[in-house]
Length: 215
Image (tube, rainbow, N blue to C red):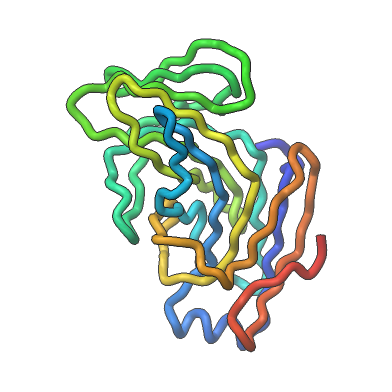
């Protein structure tokens, strides 16, 4: 990550709210939406992935540069399952390039375009592909999936980060876990593409929801 990440979100709690959250065994959960397109089918109806899930402190800083990698997994996206990254590009993917997954690893070919592209040429497995994004959460480096999409052998997938963030509480404890859906009560907002933003999010203990305190 660069010295000054493009996106920074500070999430603040008071002591009473923290006591309530820890007593309920819940975590801060962040979904970072990605649209998926595979074989003429928009895959946005897939279950959401909790990109980040962490136990909160009074002040929490989540910071990242939007430089996703492409990953492959054999984890089936059942509700509450945690996705195991079985293979990954190992470096930020380039838009327009095509990354082919074969023999258990990714190889890339240059190209032009606005989407992140991957092809599955791996036989013998039910493969799911998606984007994984690194973040710094309270000083800890985390890389976790943002989405997961089934891609059959011989198919290609296109991924477009939406920069749409949803923040809510859940009982999930592991980043990269499947959530059946994003609750309607979640705080959802869209980040400005390629513009540095520092946001302050606060917690309303009266209704257990988040709100933007400053943008």
